[in-house]
Image 1 (cartoon, protein in one colour):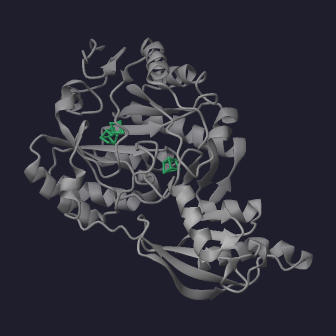
Image 2: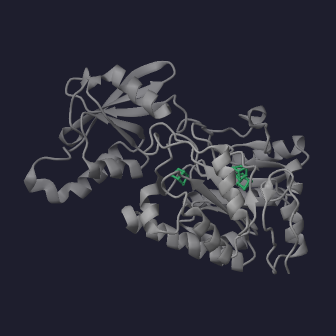
Image 3: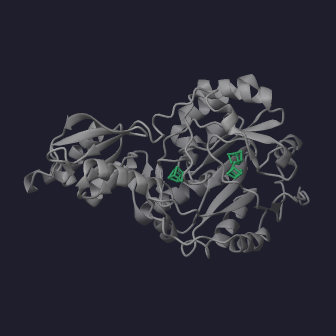
Length: 426
Ligand code: CLF
Ligand code: SF4
């Protein structure tokens, strides 16, 4: 049964049919959801930042910050354990009466941290069985977890889907880490896209209202977006949310053109003929709390014992390729010991040396490269960044897929570390 338009003066418009299978209870819940419907705008949502890891690398994402698929670049959220998230929920619920939704939107990907995601939902539902749980994901692991998502009683899932053409997807994703295998180019984009589409179809056939976020990258997927909208409509998605790319410093897309509000809304209007559009997305942070237009997260900061050590600038470890601990003057492949520094708002402090077998010791040992880079990653696993004069494409990608940034420069160590962080932080 098709429902009429959900008249939305606050920013949703277009064709807004509920699917035939939608129960009255689901419709009632959806009318309370601030992102899905106009009536819901008055209500608050709380994001719990329990998902730090990600399994893909979008070319617009600087992983020092929150997932850009639902957040503004340059926003950093602390991480909560599931227990701390549940505790914080009780505190927030007591103070914000109209809190209706708990969302998991990063700071990485909800499904790349499924254990934490699941545990958090279970704990919060024990406290408040009526709360609407809302998940946001890049969709890579949807085929694996869709059943469990349904079993957890989740009715609202957002999937970010930027392309249904691997050629276009290859321009948007640097790599896809699919169950430990790094896939690049069209191969990676194809696996991601297939899993996203399969996952959306499964969810919509099993009682989940799917919202699709699409990041508009001018000159890359702008002309392709109506096709994406059409496809997800066919698969039963409920609405799309076309979001503008905000070019973040330190990313492949840092110099991409901005999209004007006019261009964005023209595209949304065009797509609203196909399906319901969201016009009021705030690109919130992964620990946002409150109504969409009135973030109250600062008020509750610390009440859930957030851990910032991995995400904040302070206490970040940097590995430096240096012969004499004065200059950054070595090629990554020639290093047999890295110098580890702590970068914090109080300054730069030398911590220790870490020995490593040289990554590149000549042609005879080249076959062994994979296991060597793995050793390097193990040794530098807690570092946020590696600084060297040069680094090859392969090791650079491997480090990046393990959330370790690389930066190439020749400079004094102190100036080099400051330059690299300035560049990445924008
Ligand atoms: Fe959060 Fe996202 Fe759920 Fe909303 S946000 S997980 S669907 S409860 Fe909403 Fe924020 Fe836009 Fe997201 S305004 S970024 S669309
Ligand atoms: Fe960043 Fe993309 Fe992962 Fe989100 S899904 S955290 S934008 S890489």
